[in-house]
Length: 299
Image (cartoon, rainbow, N blue to C red; front, side, top):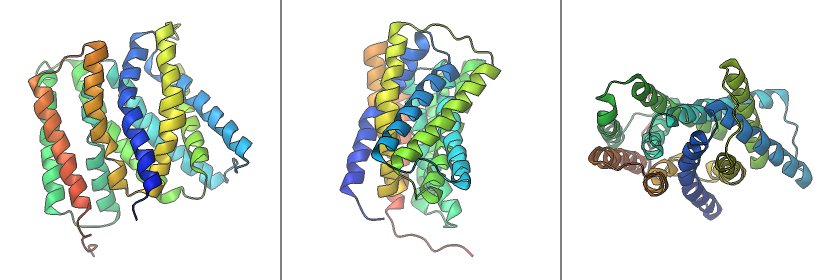
């Protein structure tokens, strides 16, 4: 896939905006929102606004039934699996820690692409995976040493979340290509939001009245995280190689750690530095391996 300047500009939007969403998650959860209730009140309004915009532009907003199924599947993988698990984990751990764990997304994406394309992994890819996993271990030493159930839960969820997000992204890139990106974004967020609403009701989440700051953080997520950045993400996925698009996952943690420290006084310790450095080195090696000539498919 050739390099696209427009795609790179959309990727820059993802770099900058999604770095701040971890902080917004945390602020919303600290100010009256429950995880799935917050997701529902974010994604359903965002999806409806995008559909109204698409209709105003005269784009096709009624996908076929098979395409609707693909949008539902990809939206569930991306938002319920990828984002929903983050919301649950963010209740128990600092936002910067969450961002560093999600930095493994490029590792999962490269691994899944290799399996789907039946390509033998390069030595550089394997090295990157091992270093990235060592980084995850180092990052979790302080928390897992306490052995508390919430830390173990957060660790598990933040391992699964990037795998789900990578799966949804690859599925979107390979199977949803004949709709406007805004329409794709709207339906995926609509299915994700409806899923959040069902889970919120099923789990009996209390629907507290959030504070003004809580609503402000959710409004920020709707406008910047969903309407702007996620649509830019869909466009970047169409215009750029996936290995380049997923580099957002190791740009975001650096900014997210600083924002968490600056606004929420979240601590920065030695294990954050060691684990973060190893994770970023690992995904960097994975990215470099994707720039090498492709290996021949296995028979």
